[in-house]
Length: 297
Image (tube, rainbow, N blue to C red):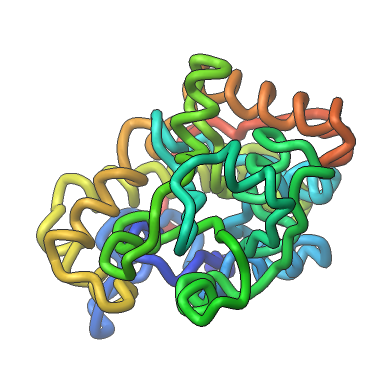
């Protein structure tokens, strides 16, 4: 049995779609994993972005904006992505609800990491000389804003659903802005796999593993109630209705397969960011499609 470590963010959407690879309470996987066994590891997205630079995990979630820095070692899997289809990270402020007014004050804006798609999208929307950003832990952004430590912040994960509870004002939705600019969904998170797996396990391994990953997402969606029950362990205070809403936003047809439009969105996002020197040039953007699933040995 070939062992693979799959790292994901500690969020309900990632937990929802990957738990079928290992099962619960020692019962074993819910899907046929062929000649591979999986180990799940949960870490925050900025940590995963950093670890990807050292190729620490066989399969890992990363910010799509991180791909140019790791593309020599990793390729996207066709499934497992989080795209904001007309929605995305929220730029919020304790005092302002207008972008022009906010930027006129050269604000300090909190962001959830230097390597995140949220920061890249923010820099695409607003010139670098119009604000100063400070990278902090994503879960601390709202409390820091309420404590008066910054003028605004970019919220990801469950913060996209809870900002109103904290009395914050919406300045801009980065996903809505990107769609208005390009007509495309905003690529936020991607799932990547080490290219070297093909050398370790033989030709066709990448496609076969991609098929297993696709079957996990399929199974989770087909058994939504059971999968949501597990995902609640990663919901950080969300009730079941909001957790279900969050999963609905980021585990959907885009997650099953980028498709041509999703791949176009990634290329456009990375290309525009590179042209503005926000990100390195992406190089080859590869997507591993599912292939034939091997029989268990």
